Length: 292
Image 1 (tube, one colour):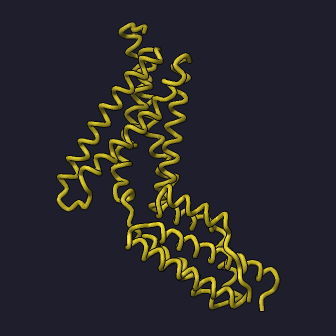
Image 2 (cartoon, one colour; image 1 turned 180 degrees about the vertical axis):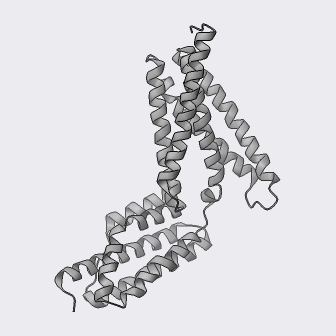
Image 3 (cartoon, rainbow, N blue to C red; image 1 turned 30 degrees about the horizontal axis):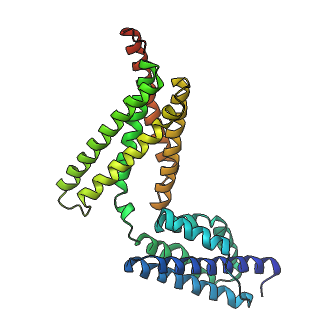
């Protein structure tokens, strides 16, 4: 027999299980890929079994959380199945505390715990998404744009001191570099004999990631053309950190990787190159006596 506090904990677990059942079912109906449909249905059935397991101890029916159901469904539709599902699993930090407590009271709960920790994680890793297949190409375009353009804009800011000229030079440099990177990725992917990636798709992902980053970094110079170039550069560097934060968070969740290490590394490289380019720009401006 469960005491009142323990019963509340079990009811909460029961609610989570039935909510996730409906999320997985809804996602399985909305995806066209039969492979992913089967995996999502399988996970959904696991969640329903867990719900039924907890129900025998509470003797109550529990309704799913409508807010949570729609939130994770929309996140999964916008940012991809793997990201949405892994984010949902990350949001259950309290579950581990619950499991460590409940196994002492209900030894059979160990079966559910093992299922949550192994079977479902294995199934999630089998989900096939094109974006994750080409994530290396996206990373290549994004990282290269961050490093090259933050450095170029920092150098141009000190060299020219003209916001519109800096924006124009940065845009031309960025577009040319994005086309170059896309072409390089196409040739590199095509030369990989065992690669399952489509060279054209890899090039498109790299090019779009690069050009998106370029536009986002140059935006302060275009919008704040009447402001000091140093103000624009400061906002650009903040934008660069924001891009790294968002993308690194996405990768760390979707690919189950360390966030802090990757974030620190990319920001350190980007800002380091920007600082070096800033010094070079200052030297060029002084040496050639440029006043534009």
